[in-house]
Amino acid sequence: MDQSANSHLRIQRIRSDSDPAFVELVRIYTESHPENERKPASLLSSMIMRSEYYFLVASINKIVIGFSITICFLESDAALLEYMAVAPGRRGRGVGQFLFKETVKFEEISERCILIEVDSNKVESKDKSDRTRRKNFYRRLGCREIGGLSYIMPSVSNSMPSAMDILVYGHKLPDIIEKRYLRNWLESCYIQVYGMAAGDSRIKVMIENLPDNLQLI
Image: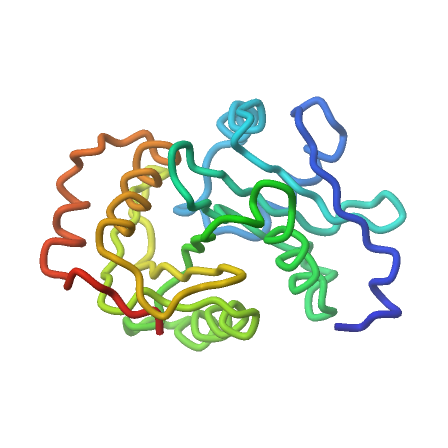
C-alpha cells in the first residue's frame, strides 16, 4: 500500500440515506458492480436503516473514494461483507486493502467470521483472469475458501447472478469448520440478506453431500 498517497484516508460509518456520502456510495456502487449483482438504490436506503448493517465509506479530503457494506447476522457468529468497491479512478493504489482491513476490525464486525461472496474462477468465462485476480486479492488478505462448497447465490435482480464462491475471514480462523456452522451461516445469509426462507431447498442442495467437518483452503 502506498502510505504517502493514502495517509489522509479516513473511514466512517454512515447511518442514513440523507447523508451526502450516501449519494457518492451509490454512485461508486453502480459503477463498480454488474447489474445482475446489484440491488436497487431504494433497497440500499432501507438497508442502511437496519442496525445490523454497517455502511462504511473511505474518504480523502471529504471526498468519498470507496465503501463497504457489511451485515452482522442476528443470532450468529458470522457477518457478510456484502459489497465493497473503490472509485474507478482510485484503484490500484492500495485503497481496497485499506478499506478491507478497516472494515474487518470495525466495532462488532471484528469478532465475527466474515463471509465474502466472490465471482467464481472455477467456471470458464471471458473474465476468468479478472475473477482469479479478485479472489487472490482477498486471499492475500488472509481469506480462505470453504472446501467442497458449491455456493448458490440468490438473485438480486431480474438477471441470474454469476457463479459465485464464498471466502471466509477471521482473526483466528480455524483450519476446519463444522457443517452445522456452515448451515447456520447459509441460513442467516438467505434469510437476512436475500429474504428467503430458512428451509429454502437450495441450502439443502449445497450442504447435503458435504462431510461433517469442512476444510478452509
